[in-house]
Image (cartoon, rainbow, N blue to C red; front, side):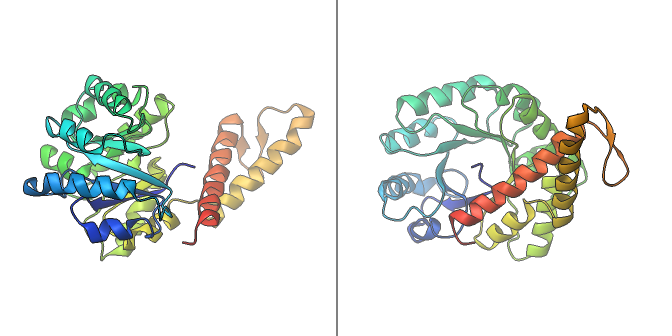
Length: 286
């Protein structure tokens, strides 16, 4: 199943790592990058290695690690070599070549062969279509804090919609999973967080990163179709199945509008999204 929620946990916070697997997220990302002060990097590597070695409590669906960029990346790899993770989050990527090189290093170290590049630089945004095409890229994630600082955009600026759609299009063109939405540092305002997450889904995202456990349930609720969407999609598919016996191409749907194969594909995606949400819920209590 494709994860809906990714909970970032600072790699130097042992007590948070210990509880991370039971917070209800579909995936946990142990962070070795921005949430860890430079002086604590080595300590964080040791704590994350120990966390990955603890197989006693695996309630979370997936375990990921966000690696540092540049030279510290190799130190991260050396510290975690031999551990197994579901994937690596690559920070501040700019080119498809550096993504391909990172995948090779991770694979040779026995860590993983799947990555999620963080699109959080202007160069990375310009190259996101090429980055998405690199074999081993699982899905893209947008990092709006760093990207916004570089572009001069504040949170919830209307300009973000165009940037977000660019990453959705790059993912669809590369035939990889839809991208992961950005973190929101305001974990107290869950109503706004939920509304923004629903907006992300309407733009084509199918998951979101979180920095606090309180954001997980809101993400799960927002990343599934509404009852109205699901009912419309189900009715449309039922009508489509009925018309197939008469070899009809386009036809008038249950709501009186013209329907063809493109609308049927939309309906199938809505139903699949709803089934994904149910499957995750059946797998663990929310």
